[in-house]
Image (cartoon, rainbow, N blue to C red; front, side, top):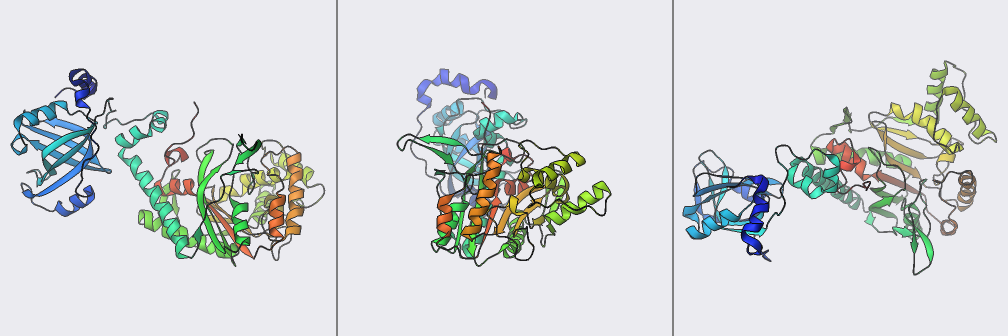
Length: 499
C-alpha cells in the first residue's frame, strides 16, 4: 500500500472522479457498541459466518498482510473496530483488489460481512462487501502525534474530534450533563421555556452587551446577557416553575473561564427562597457528579475537588471584614457603611490603603466587588456559598429579612470560580424602581456594564410577582469541572476565535 502521507492526493490523479460515487445510502444493522457487547466473549479463532453485520466507519489505520489480506482500524461512533478483509470472503478477486487499491486512510467506508475473532483475540468484521461512502481527499494528521496546536484544533474541530479520541468524550459528557439537568428539573415539575435572544434592551445582569441593528424595524437591538427579566414575566403570568437552558452573550474579555458566547441554565420557582435553592444546588451537583463520573470527586486546575454536600456558607461582608482585620492587624476595623453618602470615597481610600487596584471606573459596585475578589473568593477552593451580598451589588435581589443592607443572595464558588448565582427575587415594584434609579447613577458614572432601568419590567411587577427564588448555573464551567478541563475553549465545540 502507498504511504499514508501522499496516498490521498495521488489517487485523485490516478482514478479521477470514478472514485467518488458518494452513494446516497448504506444500511447499517445496529450500533457498534451493541455488536461489540454481543460478541466480545466469543473464543479467539471463532468465525460466525451466519452473523452478518453492516457498519459505517472512518479508516484511521491500515496495513496489508500480503496481497490477499488487509487490516483496517475504523473509528465508529467513538469506538475502534477492526476490519479483516480476506480475498476468500469477497465477492470476486477483481473487486477485492480494486477496492483495496482505492481505499485510503481517512475514508468513510461501508462494510458488510460476518463477525469473527482473530487468533490474537481481536474482534473483527470480515467483509464480503466494502464501499467508499465518502473519500478523504486531504491527509489526516497522525493519530500518534495528534494535533497539538490549539488554534488548529479549535478552528478545525472536526479534525480534532477525528484524531483526538479524548476530545469526543468531553462533548459526550457535556450532553450527559445538560440532559441530566433537564431531567432533574423536569422531575421537579419545572417546565422548559424559551425567551428572546434578540431584544430591544439588555438586562438581567451587569455586563456589556453585543449591539446590533434591525433593518426592518429601524432600531438598535441587543443580544441578551441573561434571560432573567423575561423568565420572571412568565412567573408573573402564572408559570410557577420555569427554566431555560440557552446561550448568553457578553461583549467582554476572553480568558480560561470566559467566552463571549456561553451557555447557562436559569430557573424560577414560586414559593422558593435562596435557602431552598442552596439545598437544591448541593443535591443537584452531588448527584450530577456521580451520574457523569461515578464519584463526587474531580480534579480541576490541579486541585482535588469534592462536590459532596453540604457546602460551607460564608456571609460575604462579615468574611470580608474579618479578612481585612487580619490584613491590617486591627481588631477594631469596621467596613465603611455601603449605604452612606461618602461610601464611594471611603471604599476608594480603603482600596488604596490595602494596595488593591481594579479597572476603572471606580464605582461603588466595582470597589466592593474588587475587595471581595481579593479577600473572600480565594477562600472558596472547595464548593462554598458566598451569601448575603450588599444591595448595591444585587439590584434584583430581595432585601434580607433580618439583616439590613444585605440581600438574600448567594453565589457558589468552586476553586475560586463562580458557578451559580441565585437569590430570593425582589418583587416590590416601588423598591425595584428605587434601586434601578440608584444603580443608574453608576452607569452615568461610566460603568457600561450596568444595564439600563427597565420600566417595562417595573410595570410587570405592578401586576404582582409571587415570592419567588431564582437560580442560574454556568453550563460550560460545570462541564470544565467534571471533565477536568482548564480552558473553557475545550468544552465549547466552536469557541470564539480571533481572526
